[in-house]
Amino acid sequence: MTPVHSHPPLRVAGGRVRRSAVRRAVMTILAVMAAPALFAQAPTLATLQAQVERLSDRQAIADTLQRYIRGIDRHDKDLARSAFWPDAQINMGTPYGRDEYVDHEEAELARYASHQHHITGQTVDLQGNTAHVESYVFFFALPRDAKKDQVGPLTPGRVPANTKTRLGSGRYIERWEKRNGEWKILVRAYVHDLSVDADAVDYCDTRPCLTRWDREDLSYVRPLMPLTAEQRRARAEANQKTRSPAR
Image 1 (cartoon, rainbow, N blue to C red):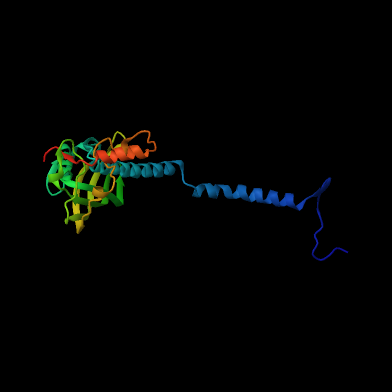
Image 2: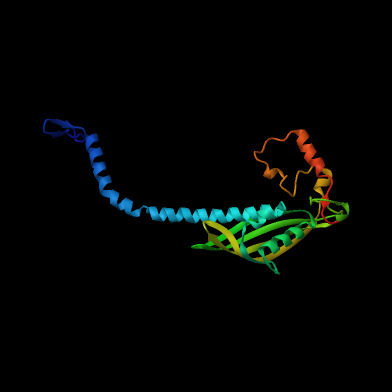
């Protein structure tokens, strides 16, 4: 007598068929039947290409803006200038063309002993070969003791005692254009949002400083190799004497 919960083996002409084989066959049939619906839900190649291009455009804009920030903090005017189209219009309170703006900004930053700019949040509205971009920028600017400068190529300076450093934040509001596959700034307006004053500290007066405002800065070295203690000391000693083209 066959037990209640047992199942007799399947039979076909010429012998038995294992139940596992039947299950596999059924699953294969179901998968084939479901395939058209799955493919209908999958993104098309054109959709994937558009998504990749959009991500590539956003990354190119971010990279170009970081190149500009590096340029102004290293006083590398060619690098800063490369973020703008030649016909760019910039207004930071006063309207400038590209070259005039880069020259003006470099001269203004040269009045400080040290400075840094940091890009934080960014929104990008892409419309074909045009993008409207809002980028938050946070910056530090330490006062410079020009009396300690010697005449020569510009270097970071010394901070006067008992002075304040300026911390500020604002936004670059920009229109970018993509020309020949390259994104650059065409229109820039700056909106300043806040400023904070804090006690200034002359870090380089008591500790070795390696920062340079030219292409001798470590960030330009290719390939970068580990510095020996002697090399670090030599760089720091070279920075002890601050210089400015005009005292």
